[in-house]
Structure formats: C-alpha cells, structure tokens
Length: 525
Image 1 (tube, one colour):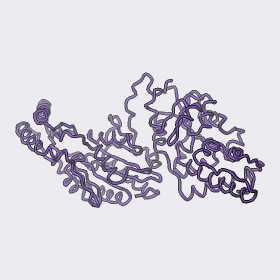
Image 2: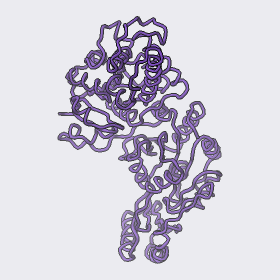
Image 3: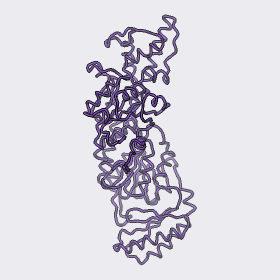
C-alpha cells in the first residue's frame, strides 16, 4: 500500500475531529433515561437505563439521529411510530424524541462549547500542505454549527452531514453512501482516499465503500471492535499514522518541512480554541537579533510591552542559553518564568526555583575547563570565552580564518576529552561546554510543564527558538500531545519544528497576532 497513491482524506466529525461525542452521549442519556422513567411511571414498565459506554457505541454512535432513537428503543423492546421531522421535541414518536435529543445537545453545546482533537487538526494541516483534499462527514445535522463553534469550518474542501441524507437520498451509516458522496465532492476515487472513523458503523461503511485505507481511532476504547468491523489500522492518535507500515513503504520521507507560522495563523488559532496556552521563548536570535557582542542584544520596548501583554493571557517563559540573571536583566518583565543556561537554572513566580543538582556537582570541572580554554585560544584573534554559571561559551563569530576556527573547535574537543563530566554543544558561531548530564532545553521545558501544572488536558505548549539547541525543545514537543514548535530560520532549514518564522521582525508580528487571538477568543490564562 503506497501512501503516495492517496490524495484525499475523509474524516468523521464527532470523536475524530471534535470532542463532541461526550456531549452527544450525555444528551442521549438525558433523553432516554427521562423517557424510560416516563414509561415506568405511566405504564409500570421497567427498563435498563441508557449506558453511555455500551449503549452509545452499539446503538447510536455514528448513526443518523432518528435511526439512533429507533435502534436503542428496539433494544429495550419498545416500538414507536416514526412521526415526522416537524414533531414537537419530546413527542412520543421517533422524530419527536430525536428532536428533543437535538434540543438537549444544543443547550449543552451552548453551555460548554466544543473542544477539538489537536492531533487531528495538526494532521489535517499536514495533509493540506501536501496538496491533499479533505472532507468531513457526520450523521448529525449539527455538523456545520459544531465546526463553526470550533473555528474549523474553513479547513475542509467538502462537507456531507445529516442534512444531506434526505435531499440526496443517501443512506446513513453503516451504508457507504455518505463517504462515497464525499469522495465524489472531492473529485477522487474511493481507492485514492483515506477514511478516519471512531465508530463501528463508520468503519463498516468505509470498508463497504472500498476506500484505500480505513483508519480506526480508538482514543479511549478497546481497539478490537474497530478491527473486527474492518479497520486496516487502529490507532489512538492520528499522528501515529505516519509510523505505520502503510506510510513507510519503501521510502525515507525525512522530516516534514516547516511552514510559515504567519501564513498559518488560522490553523494555529483553531488549535488554541478553548485551550490554555503556555508560551516558551528563546532570547537571542528570537526576541532580539544575533549581534557580535551578547551584551548589545537589547530588547526593544515594543517587544517588552508585547511580552507584558502576553503574560496577562498565558504563561510566558524565557528559555535562554544566557545565565538566568542575565536573561532577567535583558528582558526586565516581571511574572515571567526564566530558565537560564539552557534550563539548568530556573526561577519563576510563586517560589518556583530549580538548579540542576547534577550540573552543580560539575561546577569545579567547568572552572578548570574555563582556565584551560582561556589559555589555549588566547592567541586566536576574534575568539573569546564567556563564562556562565553552568556553561562556557566559546565565541568565534569574529574569527576570520577558517584554520583558526578549526583550532578553536579542537581546543574545545580536547578540553572535553581531558576533563571528565563535560560535553560540547554547538550553536550559532559558538561552541559550548556544558555538564554532561541528561538535561537540555527540551527536558527543561517538560520539567516546567509538569512543575507549573501545565501537563493536563486542554493545554497547548508553544516554543519559539532559533538555534540548534532549541531543536531539543522541538523534539520534546513533538512527543507532547499539544506541542507547537516554531523555528526562527529560513524555510529550508532542517528542523523538528512544524512552523518557521524568518527573523525577529516576523517573530514580533506573529506574537502580535497571537496576542490578538488570545484577546479575541476564549483561550484561558
């Protein structure tokens, strides 16, 4: 199965794109339990209440609303007339009960809003950037309202929902009609399209439609029933799809090139909808341009004011290779978290403090390395040693001769070999000597995520940085459920970040857009 034969994806809405399945399940339970109690009080009948886990999946999940009503009632031995779609909500007909369920659903949606699955939004963005067409299908008549509430409607090239069933004479799931119509709308053959479903009836429909790949999403359920229904693959997170055999056949794809964060602010905004943001920022090369002398990398007043405003809406942390005190002095914004020396030294509001114990034990070795490096490169014009508490930066930006640069690197390599417990790290025109412990910017960010209580559902963790040392953070966030990495570099840079910004002015422009998103949406601080 060659992934490059696929040109389109068709995704179910509830449980795949949006987290409205729980809202639907609660609405169904409220409807059926009230109706069964009514029959018990009126007719003396005794029926088992609606079970959200078992009954929802077996009788109503993925089906058109009226079909779901009929299917569940039949499981309890209850037969009602169909009625008609104009029946009053709650009238004792299939349509009347279905209309009451819809009324309950809308009330809950208005009260609680809708959350999205960030893995799906991220994967849709990747497919769209690769030139794929993407459709959404739903048996619900509320599909468009849900997508608008989640700010996702513009992501899709086609939509087929419960409103189309009657006018287009389409059968609901488990019939394949809706999927086949979506493929037709996209202008692709079923064999060219992937279907992503979380419902048994949806998987059965896609299998009957002979689609190229049927993917089951089992986020919080047993995967066996989806496999038995005919799914080719069952995964818990849509990003796992890239690791399956079907998407590794005979080709080393390499990292996906980053795309412009400025040109994809709508996609990023959709991931922030009804979520809490934590923003992590490098300093040099990100908030300020790289300069010859580090002490000249002053923060503009516009950027400083922007950071203050952002900090009113979300957690903001500065993660820098500079010493923590140096970074604090350069930024001069209170109530931020400051992680200096690549995260070896951290302080923040409400008593947050950490200095890496393993690194502290190696301070004598760093002292010795500093002395030796100063001696070994003293004669190299333009090279200089900058001592930080937990690192030694050897700068060669002003070294003109390539042989002298090699001499500088050789000196760093020799010192790291001669003094146990130290390692060399690269950067923009610097070599850094650091404690050789399992710690870097990525681990520091994950430590902060846990320490600040950010490792919970509904969080989005964003990191913006420009250097190779920031790649550790990008890689860490790729493994995080809701991580967004943005590299400050040219579009062709090799990076684990999903997005790029070209330079510091673009960073400022993006942060201004981010502030507007936070101010205008319901993103919580």
